[in-house]
Amino acid sequence: MTVYADILFLVNLSLNWFSLILTSKIMKLKSSAVKMLSAAALGALAGIITVFFSKTPTVALVEIASTFLMCAVAFKAYSFFGYIKMCTCLFASGITIGGSLTLIYSFFNRAGIELQQQNDISTAVFILLSFAVTVAALVFERLVTSSKSTSHGELTLEIDGKRAIIPYFCDSGNFLREPISGKPAVIVSARYLSALLPSDILDTDPDLNSIGTDRIHRRLRLLPASTVCGKSIMLGVIPDKIMISDKNVRELDAIIAIDKSNDGISRRFAIVPASLI
Image (cartoon, rainbow, N blue to C red):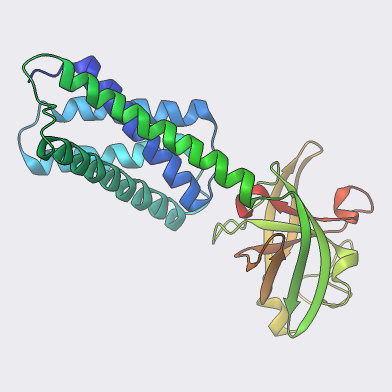
């Protein structure tokens, strides 16, 4: 069967797009449709390039390089290890999808439905199948988002055996992260943390060399923040535990960013990034 470059490009484009969707859901990453389609297109071009190489090691190197490139285009990496995890997840998703389509192809052949003909029917069926699984991924994403996510609820913060229960609000515009670990940050007003942290930490301009104890010092992090008002540095605290209560109760892998302003929505709610919901 002759497969033309444009047909191979469309097939790879749809499969790469599906892989990127799965990766974004598994890793809880945010990306725009333009970025994901651009990344999928670059991966599809790399797939065409592999046709000209007959040696398996060369093909494998091109595929690995395209995986790293797609992740760099589609998603924002906040740490080196986070980037490696993204690439590994995308590579595994691609293998899983490719293997699933191979099983479906084999099933049709065993059932007597010959997809491999001397004309373009088999190619057309394969393209339709590729787009069908992509549409299925989008429908699944929509169903999961609408059934499991909520925009508000309660958070339970725990630090050194002390607990505080505060309301939260989900904000898709909260992209604040701890730069070393890449953990997302939940923005909490200082007034909610008065029962959990020493008062000198919650001061407007604390002396980081003298506040708290060594145990508290090990929890502190500096978080570069960028808002419409400009750039600043927020003080972050690593909690023992953050539990979220919406439709279920579960633990969040996040850091607390202390908001010391006297206005804004954080005075009433903790601001949870959408990637954690």
